[in-house]
Image (cartoon, rainbow over all chains, first blue to last red):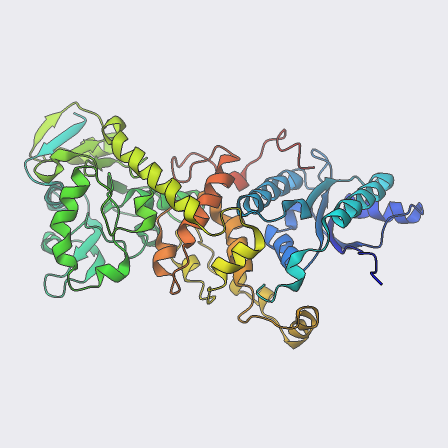
Length: 141
Length: 364
């Protein structure tokens, strides 16, 4: 019997907005899939793209980076830098034909519990359609 | 005066220029390629007296290291220093200056329209000396010289972008008998004063190398289309980097990879047994050393937009991975996101150091 594929999505969420938004989704008892594995980081700009690559190559079906909305960064400009780095990472993936759809950037504020649940649901569905990350089975990675 | 013509070949003229600079005391030292008359071996020499220039071979088709990388440890220079660099080395140095890894202060940069260099394995060969005279002739006539490195054959940026002095060589038919030195800056004009030659007001015109540039572009496209991971996804990436032995040599020689402790060599990626056990449980077999593709992907996100295409990474790769062209291809794309050209101008900010409030709306 085939079990339904439950993706594993590594989510790196900034302490001030996205992680708090995820918390709010929880305390508001909003439903979102268990596929999201949340990790708290101090700022989206703290995330070296290398960490996202590591998650991708280690078999995460999706990798989500969450930060404050542009203009609302707790450190004023961190998310602008994160956005550029993310654009470069996507560019690298696109040029090499890697599935850049498995990488997602999302701005979720501390008050946006419903948005977090929505992003989690939609992204999980998207990844379900894509299927498992092939890197999971590659011994060469 | 914006150029000066010497009655000798471009390689000889470059040495004459260095003699003038050092002999007149206008610079205190010269950094340039040298060739031992006994063994034929090359080195990069820091030369302070004129006699040291006897062995100078500043424009020979050899790249032992990115001189831009070496220049970092010699700057900020207290006294004027003249350095002969290939255009990619100069761009490499400019990228380093932007990263506070060097300073252009007191540095006179002399560069030339470059015909490309030979792979290191050829340079150490016995018959290499014989190849040189033919090389200069072919380069002058605007040919892509057979046997030069792939990175050079497909290099379109062979015209120095910010040199104080530019010597016409590649695509300059006259360069086998005459040496034309273009003086691009006030500093260059000041230092060239007293150099015996025919002065003129001609400025460097990139149009004269248009034909060669077109040939190089065609060659680059050919090389790009033959690359295995040309948009080929994970499997293609594994195929081409599967050979990687994880020596990190490509990063060591890279002028852009300046970190004293590379993240990939830090304890962050020092794994223990539980890690391997976990990985093994999912995959059944593991390839060691780990993290080879990870290293390359990571390096691409860190520096590809600043890649100057010097080709040393391919040259030092012990297993023949075409690192340079893969990085160059990726880099052309990542740099284009910001209309950035690596090493073009020292005032041009590195893309990851600046941002615009309104950009990449499609990402978030």
